[in-house]
Length: 100
Length: 100
Image (cartoon, rainbow over all chains, first blue to last red; front, top):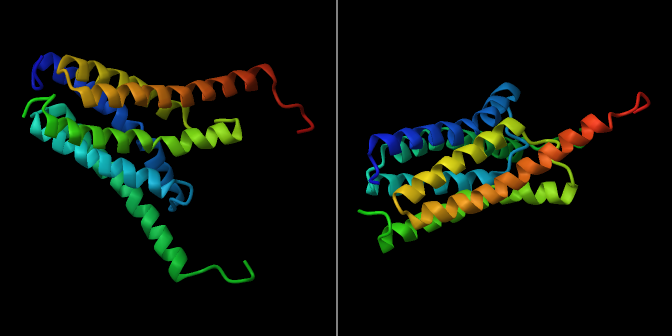
């Protein structure tokens, strides 16, 4: 089958919703807590870089579901990565005092 | 470009290594601790189901990198899901005593 066929893209969009939304609980937790202290920066940087490459792959084969999945994925995983980087910068600029 | 072309599959394999290996720190942590207590079952079940659908998509378009990425991904994420289910079954069979 070719990327772009209706049946295949329906399958791809269901796959995209599942794999992308599985990152939502983590993002919502960080939003609620206001800190990304307990996520692995390495994991998220690898994931967002990988998703950027899958996006290029999806564009090259003209696969609507792969393109959509990776744009939404990059937004979600990129936001978590940004929150983690902000936490790390804050921790460097405002080190805990000896009393803490 | 067509799935299967050398340039595209090289890109896909790099993407696959990054997105798949980003799950490895979590799997290694569970292996070290012997418990999957702190991972979300919902997240992992959604992820493994989504990966199974992406695998079918990859098979349909004959994309070696998508097929490889999702087989390894299902093994890794499926193992974490299995560990979490084992924990939940143990917790049901052996509830903590009142003293704990």
